[in-house]
Length: 352
Image (cartoon, rainbow, N blue to C red; front, side, top):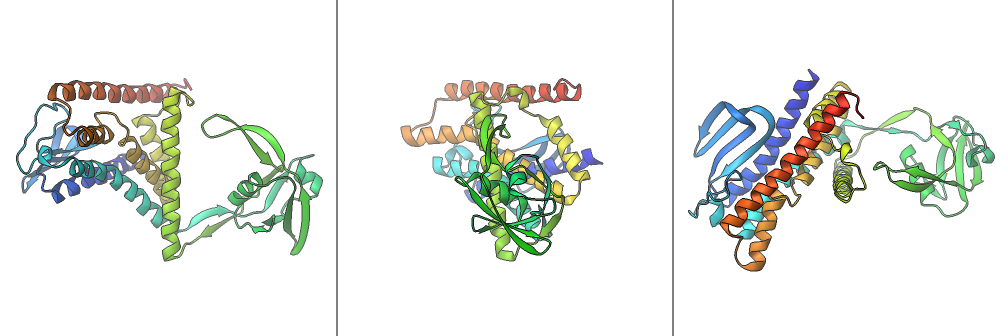
């Protein structure tokens, strides 16, 4: 059941990505020949107007085939009024950006729904206090509730680490202990640690862990938009940094996941409940948006680069140059897909 949900999630995300391209293309009067969810043999096709709407056998992608635009053969161009090639470069760029934009919009809408459904957050109750740590020496005890750090109120556990890391020198904390306010002063300890990318960092700690006491935060109509914007921006920044570190070698290529990992983790998220599924689906949607903006010729980002080149030079690359550059782009894209698949198989076999 989880795998079916995962495939449905991927199909929905791909549908919205391609719908973005389709909507922008039709807005500028470009004829769309095919709108397909999936690749390979067509299982179902219905022609509406001049567009063939299709479901194909392999639900691991999708495409919109516009008149005069064919990634499999960039020499097949058309300069009819309703073709992609006849449009101005800036119009083509908007058509290309519309797909990734649809993914970011989808993530935003999912985060907005989450904000109204209720976001689980850890409360600021202390569980374990590490012996000889700054918190232990300051007299902090189990079940103390931290309510203020350096004059800043803290409502949720995630705010504690952030506030401590941004502090300088000694900090003052106000604690609720059995309905009695207690003030403590301590100096955080700086330790060597690793971030989510495995890079060495320094961070400040006081030596406490949270009690598993959660509260559910329901956002108001307007606050929900702020939450959705912040989470979409946070997820986008995370994916951009991940790609950057993968390219620069800061993150090992064996960390790259493929379609098997996406399906597996999505299936796990679906079994954890609708909220977990929404969170992970939003992250995948952002991932699709970011990856499609990479300047690889077979992707939207590569086509955007071609159009920017045309704006700057006043003419596009020659047909032969486009052909060979596109071949290189497909080779790069297929190499990344095969690397992800190889890593997936290795993980399944316990290689990592």
